[in-house]
Amino acid sequence: MPCSIPPSQLAAFVASLLGQLEGKVMARVLSEVQKIIAKLRGNICPPVEELKKIIKVRDNLTNAINAVEKKVEPIKKFADILDPPIKAGKATVLVLEQIPIPTSIGTPPIGGTADIGGQLSSISIGAQNRFAQLLNLACQLLELLQRDQQAIKDLVSISTVDSLNEVRDRLNSIDLKLFECVDQLPDSLKEEILAEIENLPSNAGITDQTGENTYDYFKGDRKYTIRIIVDENSPGFAKKRFAIVENFEGVTVLRGPSSFSSSTKVLIDEIKFRINNQLP
Image (cartoon, rainbow, N blue to C red; front, side, top):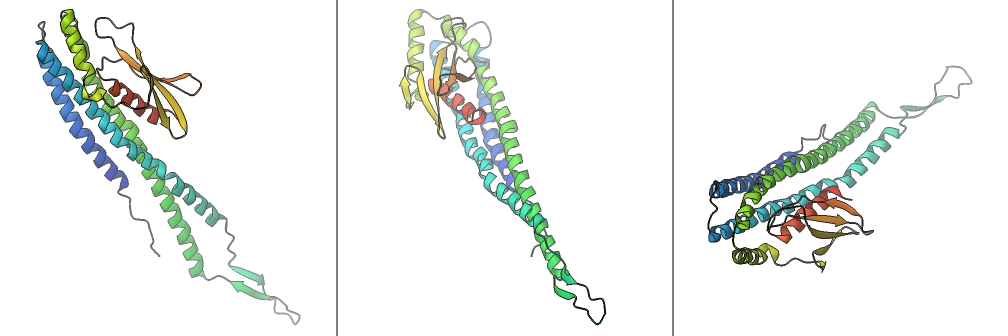
């Protein structure tokens, strides 16, 4: 019987995997954002064709962030998969702790002529040691599973989510200047830009649409309704939009941030990620 449980490398593997995902996306997004900021710097806006290119690049980068979020989801669910073995481990430890193991059974002899005492059974020291070792191993395994589960949850919720939000904020920082430039264009060119936005690849293939700017989303057996709302308080030609989530009673339980995002699908994917992380 082994004397100890070897250290787990699961948390280190997850950290390495998440680090690679984040590193690739963050490096690419930050590099492209700096290029876009350079093009938008100053009082003179880029030509219309350049604005179209910037909108496409911004759309692609936002999709890249959402793609990483989707890859993070299975990792987060793996932490939940550890729940059954952790419960089994707790039950095993509890049972082992409560098993009564007497070292001997019987009445000690007193040496008299009417002595009817005597030892009926006993457990050897070796057997007692093996039982104690079994309990110790069960405790070690339980602690290992609990540490791994908590480490995975911390890596996903603290490290990855915060890092991706930071990258998304940097990307969103270009929106105001970008759409200020678009707002200065003649109406005919504005319409041309709008047509370009509506035909972006990320606006294609949106499923579960049940009405205008309304979409169904299921998490397990729970149904949520996602609505895309125009922020009427946003100035200019390009209105900000945000996503809200309603439960089966029609009550708003979650709201995404206002964004100049040109892609409806981007807004939907972002709020789905929030549903998976913040709602039951």
